[in-house]
Amino acid sequence: MAATMSADSVERRSGVSLWRQIADKILHAIAMGDFPESAALPPEVALAERYGVNRHTVRSAISALVREGVLKAEQGRGTFVLSRKRLSYPIGARTRFSTGLQGQAVERHIVLLVSAVEPASERVAASLGLTKGASVIRLETRGEADERPVSRAASWFDAGRFAGIDAAMAATGSITASLARFGIEDYLRQSTVLSARHADAADLADLDLQPGAIVLVTVAVNITPDGQPIQFSESRFPAERVELRLSAL
Image (cartoon, rainbow, N blue to C red):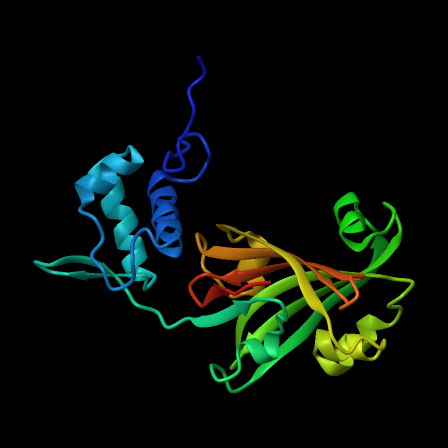
């Protein structure tokens, strides 16, 4: 029978050093709430047993996270997860970047990074009610709050209906204001799927993160009040800066 790997297992032939893998798993556990902020980290022996490595590897991982400002070692007391003030971003029926962070950040805006016209993938087409290969506009954006990057998103729109939305986005810095130029004064969140993963190279660069950082991922479809799909998006939020607060859709 083939052996199965648990979520806490390490891949010893992955090309990534064991201590870095353990550091990344501790980061993931912190982001998922397994190791609460301000609380003591489990003892080295417990972490070594959890991850199937020796204490020296765990100690190297903890030392790296102390240098990165994630953990704090206190002589005689243990190692503690540092508390980091994070923005609380609501996910609900009317999810909006600017209003969602109101009262938490003075400056809030979205920067258009890249735009392109491309054929819709099967996933994008199904979400927008189009045929596969239909022309769509992809907008790559970064959300910033008080000059800190707090989100990175890719959004797709029907190119026939929203021709020029890239120019509108560049001019307004707002998806909501851009859609208003096409006569859409209100829209609703039809669905949101949440997950978490390690930041990839693009996330590290665009969100100014360190290797091993965790991003929270939302995949969403927005519709008009009468049910027409208008936007399909995938957004990434750095878990060290943002928490997602769910409300009823």
